[in-house]
Length: 435
Ligand code: NDP
Ligand code: HSE
Image (cartoon, rainbow, N blue to C red; front, side):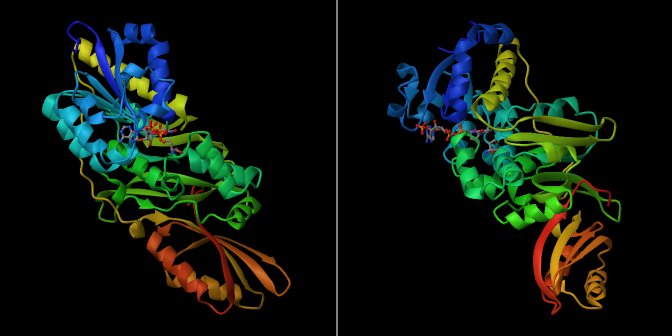
């Protein structure tokens, strides 16, 4: 039977793949240390996997393929490391409603259903912890939920997907191909079970939703986040960035934006950006993650570390497990949902961004003026222009000041239709430079 009264915290582990295997290993190897920190032994009571016969390395008496029954059994804490929404959502709701604390790394679930999960946790007084859901090993959510709870956060921006950063870093440094690098990221355990979640930006968008919700005390779901992945980032985009002393990164950007009437809203977006190579995020390589947080009183903070992989992610899971175990042993609860601000979400078209546009144009008098006129007609101000002559064409690189994203998009569309423009070679948003 459950022995929190008798001082043992019984844990159900759902999923024992890349992350779950490391959690099970650390739970066993560090049992004494964990017990000392939690105030009671933390015992692995069962492990649910899809195919128990594929896991000869695990204690066979703990294995089951019936996760629902394991959740209903006499356990105190459910650690969920399966991923995806269904059927996990029902299992975690059941656990929370029955007063079992939940630790999960499942950003896809949290980005859509955290309100429902928190409500279930509140109905029984259980804990819901999810540090590993964003940025792997990096302690980021606890600082947002707790350490910065008294401050006013204005921006959270960073690299939160290890797989795409691994791919973009390799394309930039060695010129490696996209497909081979993605295979390597999967082999190293960074990519999601379906890696399109990484390369198409779904994973980063889920993480942006979680970050924006916590930072701005507002319910933001993945569908509120503007999302573009890296599958359209070409070798010529990377080369164009390099030629200008920049690099390409996939960023999640969550901002508090003030409208002309002074009313605040939240902007949350994921897309590739060009960053100056001198920017701290430009030098974050491989599967590492880094996130900047700006807050009124704290100023700028930077969080950096391993954002994916079994052991780094298990570190965050174990930290949460010790926290919920301690709460059960000593009494008390972790933080609840904080969504009191309920700021509206600003559509991408009205979010101020900056563009880098690289064009191949006819090399004849008046072309630059015609192109500049299209920017002016859309009320987009140009910050810098660079022209390089070729044979009978010219390469034109234009960087804009901040403008509503819809105006920038319309400008690029109009330019693409001009007779004097042979090709729109590359279009990318710019971050990390004075506007
Ligand atoms: P894996 O694909 O490596 O492991 C998934 C595990 O879930 C496997 O053990 C699988 O069983 C089990 N499983 C799948 N379906 C069921 C089911 N219906 N019932 C019982 N068990 C099931 O995933 P990861 O370890 O990489 O990721 C797990 C979670 O952690 C995901 O939410 C992911 O987004 C998140 N995460 C992952 C990180 C990483 O770097 N990998 C980093 C941060 C978060 P079987 O082994 O038999 O196939
Ligand atoms: N697939 C994710 C990534 C795992 O590459 O960042 C960590 O959340």
